[in-house]
Image (cartoon, rainbow over all chains, first blue to last red; front, top):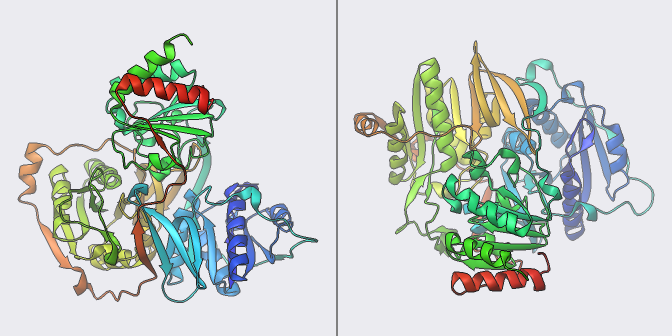
Amino acid sequence: MKILAVTEQRDAKWNKVSFEIIAAAQQIAEQTKSTVTAVVIGKGVAALSDELAGYQLDEVLLVEHDLLANYTPDGFSIALKQIIEANKPDLVLFPHTYQVRDFAPALAASLGKGMIGDCTTYREEGGKLIFVRQMFQGRTVADVVFAGDAPWIATFQASAFRGDLAKKHAGGKAPVKPAAVDLKPEQIRTKPGELFREAKQAVDLTQSPILVSVGRGIKAPENIPLAEKLAKAMGGELCASRPICDEGWLPMDRQIGSSGQTVAPKLYFALGISGAIQHVVGMKGARTIAAINKDQNAPIFEIADYGVVGDLFEIVPALVEELEKPH
Amino acid sequence: MKIGVCVKQVPAKDAPLAIVGESAWIRESDIGFETNEPDGFALEEALRLKEKHGGEVVAISMGPERSKQTIKEALAKGADRGIHIADNEFFKLDPLNSAKSLATAIKAENFDLILTGLQSDDQGFGQTGVLLAELLGRPHGTIIMAIEVIDGHLKLKRELEAGWFQWVEIPLPAVLSIQSGINKPRYATLKGIMAAKKKEIATVDRASLGVAVTPTQQVQRIYVPSKTKKTEFITGQPKEIAAKLVEKLRHEARVL
């Protein structure tokens, strides 16, 4: 099999998930006796392809074009379609980033193929690859296989593989091959503007060793102070899942998850958080996870070290009282 | 502006999920269904665009008979009419074949704008908007946090990761998938619910669309995930739970 691993960068700086997708491709290649070709796509990114050449890869394709300097779905779809048609990989792997979800389904469809997206892992069974992805917001998982001929396109969720375990080249370097693509300005329908940040990051949640996090189970904005009290009693910061910030009950910069911050505190205390995958990717690196939820089947309990099935409005005040006792 | 908005009916958030092995799906009898929450943001955005720029909002839903309820709710909130693409085994379709069916069913409508939610809370493919754009030959934008219509084109605020945003411009007609939280969806008023009864829902049988379904992928089975960690559950009265949990966090996990 031939595996193509497509990396992601912006302004010639890596998105770190690139190394996770390299690690994924290497692991699948080892099991299926396949080759791995890494793809670096953009403009002015030769230094990145040289860096990748130091990894255990069969080759690195450097795809550069003026019209790829800024990401557009048309530019990236058209260029990668040409790369796939010229290199004929069996399996094309992407990290499941916001950018990839913006163009990879269209790329797959332009090739007449489907995409299995947001996979958390895979298995190899009798020469066949089975991709595992979550459904029902993490309450169930699904084994999915490709039907029909290659190329097969799949994306892996952030943290599905460890980027720091991507293997370096045993000796020497993988060859870097520039790969030309044909793009015309009139093919690009999107006019991309500058990137900007909205709120200044008032609190850096990544630096806090203790986080108390609230989800939908907190029910109403007037209950936020209850969680705040617990955070204070523990000496930690307050944060939240996306719906709470969407409602404006806490500012956006306190959001943990795929569209917020990624944290790895000593203690993550989840109050009324079901544990939807978009949230879990932002906090599963916590050393200890405690969770209170009224639903004993909530996916947060899949990753929690300590769980309480019950009413947070009864338990949190008792916790605050307990923490405030001299010890 | 003629706007189509795709709304999906999904199992209610708190519905107990009983897995049916042979169909690799869940038992649909005895559970409640609701409009996919992310699609509610797309509908609200469609209604606001209509209020600002005039035109029509058409709610489109694919699925069994019950999914008409989701169209009715959209009509009650202010959509003008509905299109129901009937398919009792909609759950079996992969993302590409779902999008092909949708595209075929709505092509003749020539919408100026098609909106979808970010992803569905059941299958969570998150591909429909992008695929619809590709199949209909339209430009698209995803994870959209603001829409401005300026002489025949759109100025869009896209959410990127880690707190970054970007303004992009695309020409109309177009397809957008809307980020959850872009707006506060309205509730249906009693007047809206009454008015909805007179609004038209056109039903088209998916099988009659002539879309040849060649699966690109197949769900072999679904199952409850095996635990990666052993959770220690703490039980008792609230005061006992608090005492035990604090003790464990202090002396066992040593994180307090």
